[in-house]
Length: 212
Image (tube, rainbow, N blue to C red; front, top):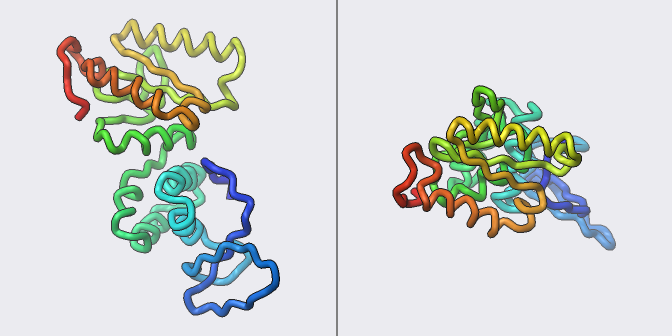
């Protein structure tokens, strides 16, 4: 389905209807999901997302859901059906999912910041700067640079120009790449929270403020 996924999984996943009948066969290494809602070679997007939640956990589910929404693999009615069919604890994840997340990396960053209850705006247009990935509070810009489109001197120069334009307007920018967000999250988290602790995400910064 072309969805952005966080981890590779080479296993074959099989969607089984709750009333389906299992036929054992030698050497089976399939992962069975007894949540299928129909017949066919590929499960529906709603069933796929439910199975991602059950098999890979909430983080992967949230990233895949926002990817499906961005790519229009699921519509508003499908999101409503999905919300009704996931466990109650997972429904806030569906409610928080956005249609305009620009990449899985942005979705992952927002998911991992959820425990800190920060006010995060996404895909924010700033005059003279352009569209930025996230703004925390009033003035802390967080940019997630994917490995596919941020390699090379021209992209690096463009980012520096944008950051300088943002600084001229009073914004503070933190920029992280794919490897940092995916593989070195603790350092990314601490960099962001240090800015928040210092109140640098708010206008009139200078007094120490809490993260929430």
